[in-house]
Image 1 (cartoon, helix red, strand yellow):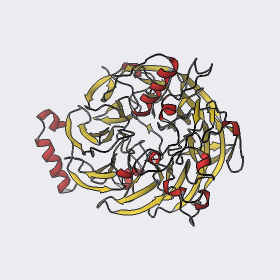
Image 2 (cartoon, one colour):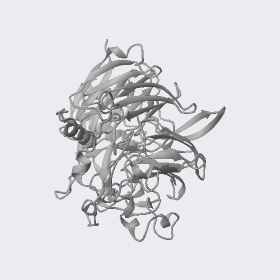
Image 3 (cartoon, rainbow, N blue to C red):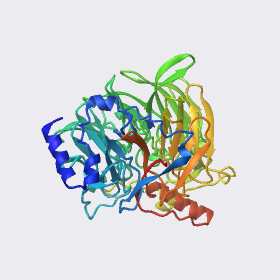
Image 4 (tube, helix red, strand yellow):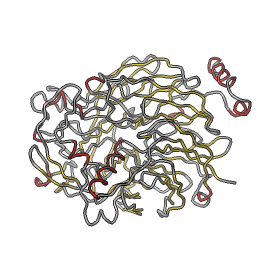
Length: 573
């Protein structure tokens, strides 16, 4: 252990009561080797591993005893709006991020606050998505991205700011909400702001200094591969935001990123395929070079961002193991792709929720054809399913290697109606081309959706089989986590419940009423031989906006309390 690491831990311990000093161990740097093979006792990154599984091998909490789960400790963050970040844990140190550019460190076992950092937000900044989806740990630093388009490096023991690096112009609408991806000496983040007409990109910073190493645009310029898919100079404000942390394959050194919709929303304003919006990109981690892509749908008309990074899973299909990329699309299709060292191949796709836009999907390329009566445009009103919030929005799926199943948090049977309107680009102003009233009341009910909308689905991807489905009356905005205890955890409903399901059968085994709706990413960890389940409650952002749309259309008022709370559970005695 390095001397400076020991000294930093000693300084923090000196400030704590004796009981805490006895439990807090020296901070252990997070190396590339640890990231490639995370210890089951820790939760070192956004989805627990580079493959994006959202899986903990821990099994002391399991399908036989989860009913005894009880609250070990909780902590009120003091912030409202969407609390979506996972509790990140490294050898007893826990870190969470919250809305308003805040990071808090805890002793994971007791909930004792170690330090709190809050980066000031410019007074003029309008936060369209006031949330933060987590921190990254790498070597002896902690990193997080901010809504004013910066990456900040902190000392994970003291909370001291080490450096901060601008990655975009917030006055032009650039911002970041995602947890960084740390690998091979680099901290990689994407920018959002497509609704302001930015040109999206992914940027890698040197983990030690913050200096920019490479930048790859998600919207190509004329003369670049894919540049001819944008007419004129529309690429300059083309959107294709990056909202969610990428996944990574250490073997090929390729990182995979999902991109959002093109800007503005109406497809007649930017005729063409609009690469690389609504795609998965494979980028070389060292250079940022584009090694492959798959576009889920071209010339998007429905605000179906495909921002979730695909999960890296080896899928058994027709007796053959396929190194796969799996993605439950906002467009309502479940996508099975093949990853190689230099390209992405299409394998298969099928609807997992009601979808009435695609007339067909090419079995060789995966390119969909559309029903023209389901494509909105400027001055053209169209209804379509799934809704503009999609079959699954940003909240991630989970995969269990123990059951071999993919678990999908879905919204089924729900539709939308859009009508485009003319829009001109002005720096820092909304560049959508759809009225806000149209967006904020955009729920169209069907006979089926009046029965149920939210779902948790379990899929055998290789067999294309839906194994089980749990249904909710209204929406599901709950990220999922699977565990070695044959469990799936998730929240996301407006009744504020956090739940555990039997991963094999779908039977609901446990639920807990949180103080607010649970849209946080769950995690699991172990301290002193005891397993814990951790999650943040805190309703807001798009879940709150969808609830407002339900209230407007259904003429009732469901109020979900806001306010963030960290909740950590363990088995009762």
